[in-house]
Every structure is written in structure tokens, then in C-alpha cells.
Image (cartoon, rainbow, N blue to C red):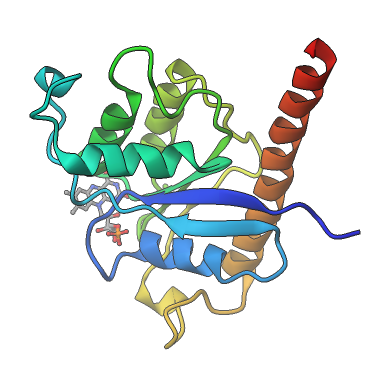
Length: 199
Ligand code: FNR
């Protein structure tokens, strides 16, 4: 039986081109037959969120484009570094932009997974869990296992094609991608079931 495909929006918390987190995200996109239809959604063109923009003609155009891409996704995958034991500002800004205007959050109910990667040994644990905290408030069911605090990741972790080299890290990331597919599938199916039952 062919497995259902789900559209996944990937947000990378680092803006730099050579980002190890971007390379992890690309490696996940490159996994074949995993049922994930990945799209990287840029966050670098989102001006700093200002509540005065809500329902205002002054709202940056990039906000609407960003929100539409998130709305169209079945699930959200965050791949983020940790900055000063916390979520990088650019990613937090994107989370805030998507959460407003009040009552119109595009995150509501979207299944999510969080990957954090760092050359350090803690693997971005702090950023990962801070982001989880925001997801709780945003009503996003976040996959519990496998957790992905990827430590000791650096440029040597990737081949010339920019993707993860074969080895335990790649195996963990592949396991995570398959688990995430099942997680999104579970949430999407459960919602469809509930909707059908309620007519
Ligand atoms: C870092 N870095 C870092 N690493 C970490 O494990 N914990 C931390 O708190 C921080 N803090 C931090 C702050 C700032 C401003 C920078 C620029 C960097 C190091 C960081 O993990 C490393 O630069 C990664 O390579 C950044 O991720 P990308 O850009 O490669 O995805």
C-alpha cells in the first residue's frame, strides 16, 4: 500500500546559507519515499513583528505570503540552532507573525516536530524546548519521540553535496523523518475521522 503524502513546511531558524540546520533540513527533504512533501519556507524577509500591523494596510506584504504557506501545510518541521540558550530571534519573529492577528493563528492544530543542531554537545536543547513551550500555547501537537538535540554537528557531518554523510546521525534523522510522517498522518487521520463522525 502506498503511504499518504503530507505537505510539510520547514522553517530553519538560521538565516545563514551555510547553516548546519539548513543542511539537516535539506537532508530530510532528500529522503526518498518517506511520504513527506517538503517545502522550505523562508523567514528572513519578515520584518520584526509589530502589533500595530494587525489588520492594518501597513502590514508588510511578506506576512500574508508567509501565513498562506503555513496555512497550506499539513505539518511543520522546525530545524533550528540555539542562540544564547534560546530560540534565534528570526525564528521567534516568524512564530509571532504566524500567530496573529489574534484568533487567526496559522499554527493552530498543525502537527509539528522540532530538530535542533549545534556543534556543541547539548545539541540546542534550550532552544528546542523553548520552541516547544511556544507550540503548547499555539495548540500545535509536537512529536514527542524521537527527540532531536543533535550535538557535535559541523561541516564535516555533510558530504560535498551538502547532505548528511552516511552514519548514525543520518540514521537518526531518517528515523525522525519517518516518525514525523506517521505523526502527521495520525493527526490528519484523527481529524478526518472526527469530522466524519460529527457530520
Ligand atoms: C551560537 N551558538 C550556540 N551554540 C549552542 O549550542 N548554544 C548556544 O547557546 C549558542 N549561542 C550562539 C549565539 C549566537 C549569536 C551564535 C551566532 C551562535 C553556536 C551555534 O550553535 C553555531 O554557530 C551553529 O553553527 C549555528 O547554527 P547554523 O547557523 O549553522 O544552523
